[in-house]
Image (tube, rainbow, N blue to C red; front, side):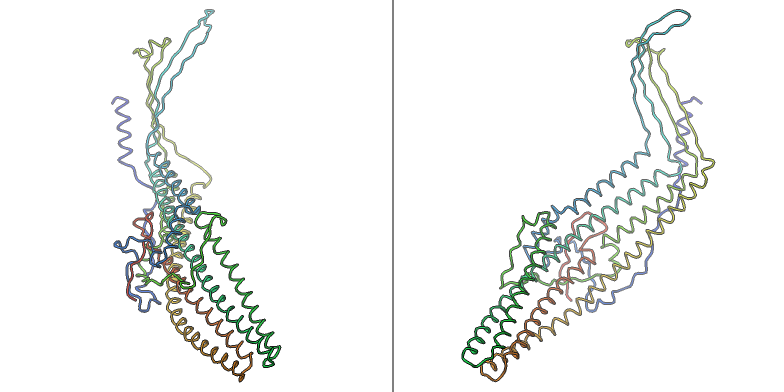
Length: 481
């Protein structure tokens, strides 16, 4: 058989006999409950309906938040970093895949030299032009396993990008919510300070008339100053939240101002219905879970890469070209040269290096499987936590609302008794302090309700889908509770 046909036959045989070393990947199994323990009256629903097509935060009905989320998606540096990491992972896959193909190179040379043979000196030129190629057939699947690992790692990077985007979105929503809660509390203290100022004037007038004691005036002044100090503290908290929002949206704090919510609309965010879906759906809807599963797949493929090193490595090479003393004669038939070759290399002894690398790859796979399962369990816990918190906060808010109404009645009664001279100012201070504390607690509880709702969105993946990890998360449509 001619040499060229022999080489072709050898390559064909290598391709036909090619196999991939190492175990084929099987997704780790998890025991998934049929329903969430804390779901209560929540109805199972798909948290990413195709008909919605909206970003999840729009369900809270705040145009300012909508604009901030768009700014963060375009300018947040953590998201840009995750996008660059994903592009890098895809480039690594292309680099690994290149190992499946032969390499081909071209050379051209021109020389002039002098030689002396048998006392005869000669000076002449030499020209050459050639092509050379080599190929290492992937007989044992080492390159294919490397590509498989790279693809899984790139998919994990895509999941990381989705997770980073969701984290920024929910963090921004939480900070914005806390800023609006601070606005509401500042408005509450503003009205309280106004009421305390009037009470101080009333007590001072009564003291001047000989009706009230100096201690009552001092107590009224202390109550007013304490409220003013608390209002300043809230303004400091609000400023820090505004700075955090600026950075999340890709701006320096000096370049951003969040206008305070008007007192008539202290909390623009509304509470949407956010069904948690079925526990089994969580495996597809959380990017961190999907990323952990893809890392397990990448680690499994690396076992094949390590095991392929036990087998011999075949290298095929071919070259051809032309050579002549004159450039014009370069392509003449006498100057043609070619070569074909094959080499087989096998490691005989390596001191246990390959065995150690296989053991290392298997241990790395076990690590990723454990991390995947722990991520799934953590996801279940987060959903259960937020469902329980939403249910209990609803109950607590109802009781706290009753406490505020009762405190308002007590304050009105105490003020009336004080004006009539039948009660001391200490009684007024006590009821006013109780009212302020109850009002502030109610504001905080309402904020915690919305915050728990946002956390539930995050815990259930924010509408993200494993089938399209780079798609923008979509909101849950309203479902009956």
